[in-house]
Length: 281
Image (tube, rainbow, N blue to C red; front, side, top):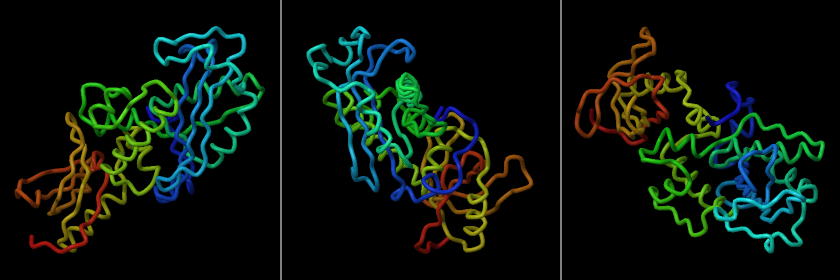
């Protein structure tokens, strides 16, 4: 799932800002194990990004204190790497700066949120992050691949991944995957990406309104549509009718290139944008 709560994100920025303007905090952690109550963070990378540009960054090893080092066979981090590293308490103020007002983005985000919550709780500090974006959840909805872990997904999408399971590398990979997913979905705001990750089965009123506009103007639309058993597809679609009396509503029409008839369930439409140029229909 893309969030720890079923309630939608709060209205207004950053969730309703244009995607190019919303501050995004890409996060990856390497840990001594998988249990946030027992294991500790030993490497952290956070990149605060606006419009695809890094505006602030933290990447550091982290001293885990008395916790035994584990997972070296996965991440390759050794005791020698951690010598002289700051502890989490020293890094906490930078976390505040990087995350303040930003949307947290990671792959399998709930693990990163759980470890950040546990580390800050040890410092008697609260970490409140009920809403975030998860490229794993998003990819499962829009990428037809055998596996959606970061390593196989990067290979499937052709994303360079030279040092798996290192925090700076995995942040770079997550950013590249995020850009691919956002480009495919053509979503205007982070809220729309959250809804895709949540897999929300609800009708978005603006999609029906645009469908009616396309019908009135006899203007084609570019539609990202998720069938029930396949990956999402992009359609160049001509609307011939909108059945709002059905539950869920259905958009009727045909594909512009093949004239093949389609009925699109409104709750499976991920994006709906009118095409600016005029076509003969």
